[in-house]
Image 1: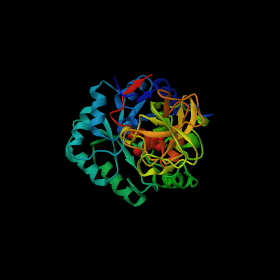
Image 2: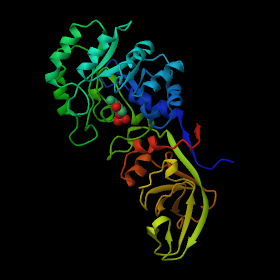
Image 3: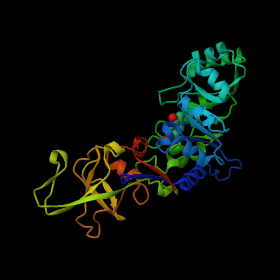
Image 4: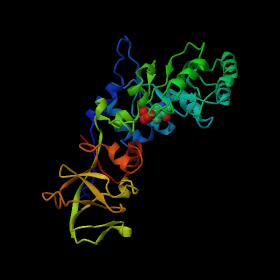
Amino acid sequence: MPRPIQARIDLAALRHNYLLAKKPLTGQREQARAWAVVKADAYGHGLLRTASALADIADGFALLEPEAAVALRDAGFRQPILLLEGFFEPEDLAVCAEYSLIPAIHRIEQLQLIRAAALPVRLPIYLKLNTGMNRLGFTLDQLPAVKAELASSSAIGPVTLMTHFAEADGERGIAWQMERFSRIGQGWNCPVSMANSAAILRYPQTAHDWVRPGIMLYGGSPFADASAASFGLRPVMTLRSRILAVQTIAAGERVGYGGTFVAEQPTRVGIVACGYADGYPRHAPSGTPILVAGQRTTTLGRVSMDMLACDLSRLPEAGVDSTVVLWGEGLPADEVAAAAETISYELFCALARRVPVLEV
Ligand SMILES: *Cc1c(COP(=O)(O)O)cnc(C)c1O
């Protein structure tokens, strides 16, 4: 007799979204290859589930947990695997060689460590260029040393240049980083990987050789001002539950911890089997959208650990056992995220272990 909450993962939608990320550029003969970004347990969707669903179409998998990369190999995946944060300990290098993992390299010492590791194979690498995100990567003044190290080392295999956009989803866009990239990357003559979901959708000219779609695979929009559906993306995760109880409260009564919602009129309150211990954001305020029996309404009061409340006053046909959609099919996770002042990435990643997953 399981609790009624459930996360449904739509594998066909996942495949649809991946192929959309790979859609060739108009007028360009060759299409970019796409790393399916499956870090953070595939944004909460399940690493092996996601990889299996994409197995016959994915060009490669990108993630950053080395043990997850090894798990993919152990499960039989043969595609290239990119470690987005590279290796963390010198011992990881033997693992990279044994399991054919491509590390992103962002500090000169890492090249020296690769040389010192005397691996049995030349290690292919992604060279991370810092074009303005200012988290990881080489800047223009560091590149002569990198070039010298590469020239004197036979430990490194093919090099791909990568950079990451900081504001592809915002007003400032990508032109400023593209300009820096073309200066830093001048004369390298290597394959290039730069586009995340926002760049793929808004600046397809950044696709180059390999794109790196993450959130769009899972049907989330990287933009605050454009819905996923407007790009043809389909939701993958639907968090569903049911109404456990209905309370009809008088004006002046309050709902939940802290009594943050005060009824201004008699109100029919539905109690939903879902709380922050399931991954629903505790900071979602009263008024966050929620779907009950296929109809939109709003949450009321504070989210508890295992329950939350919603307004059924205008949904007379809804009652105990009515189906509730917290996000997903019929209610974009992006809208719920916006109401909670976060992004769909965080909602997906927060899905709790205790929520049973059903693949559809
Ligand atoms: C997470 C990540 C991506 C994917 O980003 P989305 O916004 O989810 O598409 C791409 N590249 C790097 C380096 C990342 O860390």
